Amino acid sequence: MRTYELMVVVNTEFPENDEKKQKELVQKLIGDQKISDLSVEFWGKRQLAYEVKKQTEGIYLLATFHSEGVKVGMLEQQAKLNPQILRYLLTRKEENE
Image (tube, rainbow, N blue to C red; front, side, top):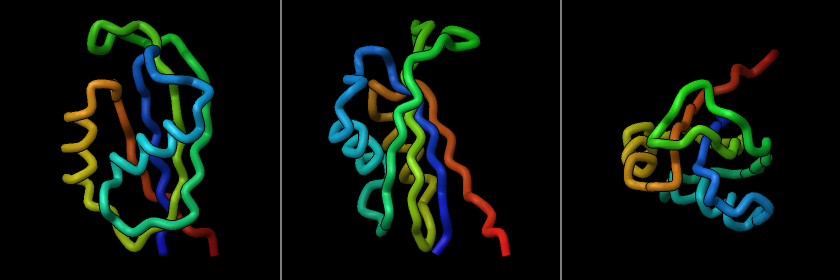
């Protein structure tokens, strides 16, 4: 299994202290893909370098999970449809041997 990291910037109306909502948001993005060991870290509210969708601040979330593969197209579609998401970045972590 491969390890993935998903950084998500959501608008400031998103509930900051609700871990359940944070995990639900990540689950919606990933969709029906099989994942394991999902952990979501709250990085807090930060100033954005430039205005995105008329927002100057965003709440940062970092999700780490394991999966055989991620369908990036599906993730992009879900991110575009969700009005709370300002930006996202999905990366695959290299395994150190």
